[in-house]
Length: 237
Length: 237
Image (cartoon, rainbow over all chains, first blue to last red; front, side, top):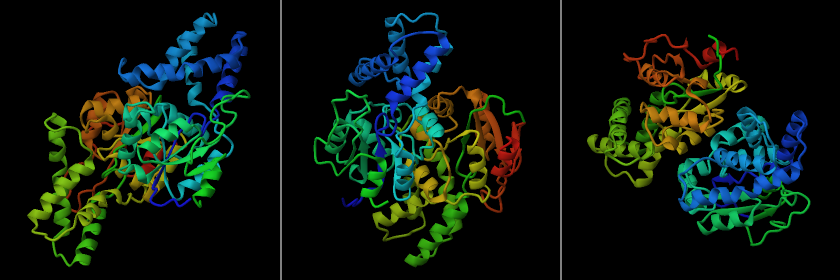
């Protein structure tokens, strides 16, 4: 593609940059062994993620005041701890589990791909994750962001239009100067409607072996690839 | 000092990390030569900075809605262009001059000092500069921030308490887990009142040869030094 006037690349993070499911399952399994708690932790991880969109809906509608994703994750975690009849967890243990979302591992192509892209573009997160989560993740995993942005500074969860537009404004850019890189067709569609350029990175195992969504590009995105290094190649980096 | 529980270092930027005055004078002089405009550009730069605090005051008081520093800088610039009887500037030329604040040069000790500090601490800006200004500056100068924060995401200009507290919250930290690094006693005093740790970096030529403020530590800050590498040394980095 012709990168044209694109100056900044915005990245969805969960699923696009990091393999949240494997990371969360490993954290939960490790914790379960230490505590002697036997649970189907893969199912627990999927349940936790299933509560992700509903937990943001009340905030999106304005029925609940703005709160960061760490808070929503923790509310969902407490629901699941109760549902799975797990008892005797301390507040510190719950906090530790909740912050597993700060310790997600990137897909193996990401550090190289982002490092190459960073030479020519401003790289910023555009995630529903909160700033602390994204900063701690980046520090641990070596993700070379120029700016950690997203739902929290915009005070709007994706796919609300303000979540995209306010982040472009934070960088002083027009939407046409921004490209969203994401593994989710719905996210890209919302961004494109507002004028963003789009790159689809297919992540067919994000949701595990039974994934049945986002297995292919469902529209003619500007870039379609399977890796972050593929995005770099398409942009000549 | 004992760094204790400090996890993040927040940095004032104008004067502390970058030599705004020399950079702005050089930009103005270069522009003046190209345009054939003769003005005392050092005086112009000082006038521009003199309008800095007053321009934020109306926003701090709530008499004007929130607006980023780029907007306030541009309003002040237009005032000064008129005052100095400079005519026939295009909007593009005014934008270019205004964005001189995105192209400030760091003091020579900063890249090394920050790079050393980054191995042990989260490094974040806590500037009245807006995000685009700080991101463009960092990209150009190689300033290795983990997070570009400050007045804009907090929607409060320093030294309002919320400008410090909301930025600590963005990193998920208590004030006692944060240290402000600044060349200005007033900034440090505001942060310390809220529970931040403090590091004073004396910059005796920030305001040029006639500087008569912030020539010494006016209180017992946790660290007192003259360079960013001095901060690194004091924190064992």
